[in-house]
Amino acid sequence: MGSTPTQYDTLQRQVSNLNPVDRLLLDSPYTISNELYSVLRHVLHDVGGQPDTPVPFTEKGEEPWEMNTYVTCECLGWRGVWNSEERRRRENDLGMTQYFGLPYYARWITVATKSLIDQGLITTDELGKKIDEVRDRLTKRKK
Amino acid sequence: MSTTHGHAPIQESGQLSEFEVLELAVRELAIEKGLFSAEDHRRFSEWAESRGPHGGSKLVAKAWVDPAFKERLLTNGTEACKEVGLNWLEPTGQGTPSDYTFFYVLENTPKLHNVIVCTLCSCYPRPVLGMSPDWYRTPNYRRRMVRWPREVLAEFGLHLSPDVEVRVHDSNQKSRFMVMPMRPEGTEGWSEEQLAAIVTRDCMIGVALPRPDWTAQQVPSQATPSQAKGKGGRK
Figure 1 (cartoon, helix red, strand yellow):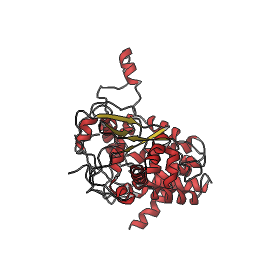
Figure 2 (cartoon, rainbow over the protein chains, first blue to last red; figure 1 turned 30 degrees about the vertical axis):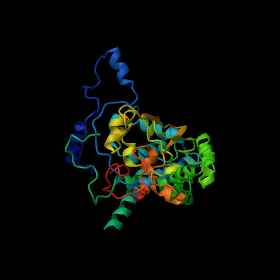
Figure 3 (cartoon, rainbow over the protein chains, first blue to last red; figure 1 turned 120 degrees about the vertical axis):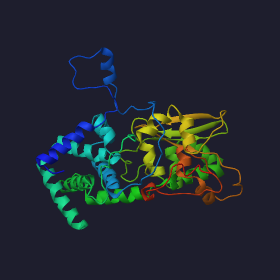
Figure 4 (spheres, rainbow over the protein chains, first blue to last red; figure 1 turned 90 degrees about the horizontal axis):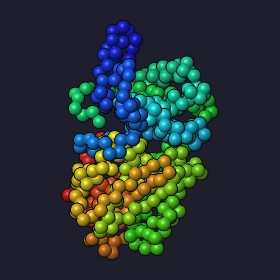
């Protein structure tokens, strides 16, 4: 996604279209009931028993970046940078839109990145520079 | 799962995935900073790629022909795994960061059928079954299996008689489960290898039953994109 004003407008339209699972209109109300307060405190990953309609249970198979994400996250655990509990907790704390919006392993790599930044092990500047470098390299390879 | 809206897929085919870029960037930075080594990543990948349902199949086949082993397997799953060459301490010496847990094997009987799920995330016995199928990780499976197991199993093609109790086991950070199905009729005199071949991944998750004429075995990471649901239970 680029950064021209037109691209920004397009992105904002899509962001406002994201459909929350909870379809109550929630836009920072002045006040809420105690009941809604307890509803809002429900942790989003605790989905067991929620009603849903049948869907086809299909298999996609692991893509290379997905397998690499799994292994990168496990290597970070192996060498003591984090543990699987931190990974799960960070995924659960992503918020409803990202938790249910991101593909499974996109959640993993997103929270691994955030953990490294939060721990001060990498900086956002380093990350941005590295992402540009990697994108250029992969783009050239694909051409 | 949002299936009611006609949005275009987020990742267009042929487009460079930002996730692929991010993973490689994070991995390279981690290696440059010495958080782990390229060798660590290579070794862990090699181990992960070598895991698959064949590990669990061996456990079940051996239990079917060796009652003493079956007893040991049901008593202490982690220890019994070592007898077929599966060590939960691999590949780091301390297990994998996500899977070093208690391991329980659940025995099906004529009156009891077991099935596994992880409602809170996607816990799965990777060391013995490999990577979980994509559908196992979906919120839909996680939502419904604990409450409507017969309906969900029927969607996989597994229709259980009402007098069979269905027990759903919710996996978690400390406990992983695997189903030991009943040995089907028509397999009398079979070798352990022949038996292992019919114990498919889906049978050990509990969404299918083994059949003498069905030997599908595939590591999920090598699955083809268009694989349909419920392959283990289809007539």
